[in-house]
Length: 137
Image (cartoon, rainbow, N blue to C red; front, side, top):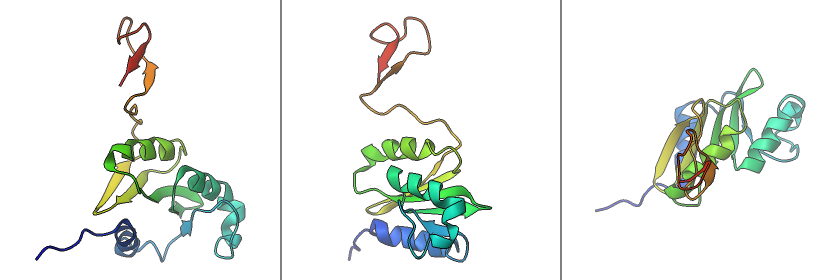
């Protein structure tokens, strides 16, 4: 008998419970204050709006600083680097929990993001890459 893979929703909910984050400062990322986020909006509102804009579902805070970001990917793993790069741009969070169908991955946001497939970026060494100063990855 085979079991169906866990849904991204189930994996994120299990992470919230398993890490006991629901008892802490875990806040839904939203563009505008809601009844649930109203009391925290002054200290965390900009982070919550930015997180929502970048695709975050919830953000865990320590002393009003975003530390862990949770997101759900409806796209395949080949798009996960794009999620990492977007959330990395927030600057402060340390970890990204990214759930997809059947898998929950944790990314270290203290590391530099990688180039996305098919993008062009500046080469790091003279003459590196197919064209002067650029490299397609």
